[in-house]
Image 1 (cartoon, rainbow over the protein chains, first blue to last red):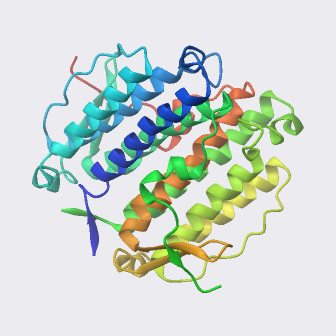
Image 2: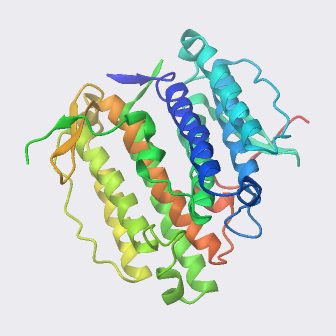
Length: 173
Length: 173
């Protein structure tokens, strides 16, 4: 048995984007929003809003490329937590609205990544998803988390994996 | 078409662990190892060696659980870059040594995560891989990267995704 392209993409992205949205609620209750919005892990790394925007891009471009459709344009204009939460919500809505059947042939679909300098990569959908889209997506998700943690927001692993809910079985010891 | 459990696990883990190992070479050439080893993103987050150890655990436990075998024990004793690189290498060797056929039935295999307090989660292999193992693995990979970046090591996205190599096609503009 193997895993459908849908199950390795849409729910993975949606779960993390929902978590990212919730982190902002916790963050806003603990620290000044203006301070957190300029947070970054290194002077030459992008600040919090860009990490949210790039996680959104990574998710919407991945499911769009795998489904062979255009991703909706989302200009990087968000400058408040409310706007970043709305960006997460739009990305989730787009990903969840994709027909799983459109993703079914995504493993063999040719995906081309283009960079502004005219160079790029050409992948099968499968290699693109596992070799680029998932690592790149979690890079930005986790960097956003790290920015909030390093600024003193009291997040923990249950916030990172909030879709799991609390441990729900009693195990043998 | 769908993706095999092997292709969503072993190469994903191995690529990132190889990158993590290479980051330490770059880090050692730029900053004192002793300073980097105590780096962390927040006072209540774990330092660099623990992030490497937890990435290793996450990878080896994932492929072992999906294959229905025991993961090799790797006590968390590493205290130098050389030892962390060796931990990455042992984890890679274990993951690459797993018979893909043993992973083939992993999607439906029941996986139980146990925590010390006697509670836990029970998953299908598929839900475990996409809902827990991959996000948790990349959490520790990216947190290790963030620790090195925040300490001034000159890593970039090509180091995070070094398995891709440089962009290798000329694209239409």
